[in-house]
Image (cartoon, rainbow over all chains, first blue to last red; front, side, top):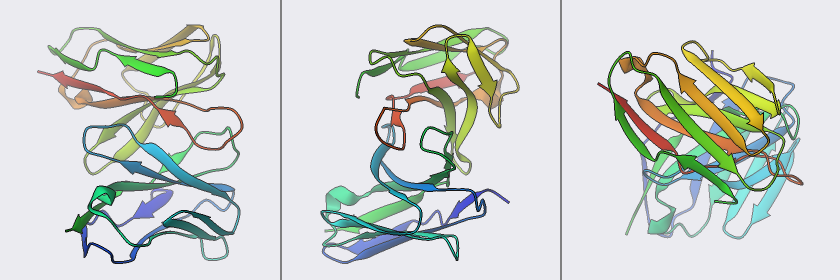
Length: 111
Length: 112
């Protein structure tokens, strides 16, 4: 079992909809949780990270972590065609520790 | 990309030849990582470094070696390239003051 699991998609939603992307993880020692966005033929870029359980909001993006259920979520409000990309969730035990990635979910926002 | 560059950007090489990919950073970060990304497998850690001459293996290190003789450079070498090493290779650094990596733009390697 891979340490971080996510549905590969693709997930297609109409512009303006709320998008929900989800992951599960198995390593209970994870303390840091990250979401990356990757456009085609580009490197992943860090969207946001959270420490331990809880929510974190940044503009249209909200990351949520529930350590009791080992569940990671990313919500995108008012989705735009420019949000079309692959989204990678990830976890690590410490801030400077190596990161374990999920395989990514492809998201298409339909104009 | 926050002072991290990879070279070359694209390379086609023949089976059995040695290949070296370079990752260069300008911000004196201690931690550097090499990942490969393949469809159906996602990002997998090959090797990582916590400082000059301090390297360790990741989950898919067979067939790869690394060197870090200077803080700013982390080299990934395929001693004898195979078709299974056709992939996109990403270098990453851990910037200070935050969690998560900053990635380079990647090297697209094709072994024929």
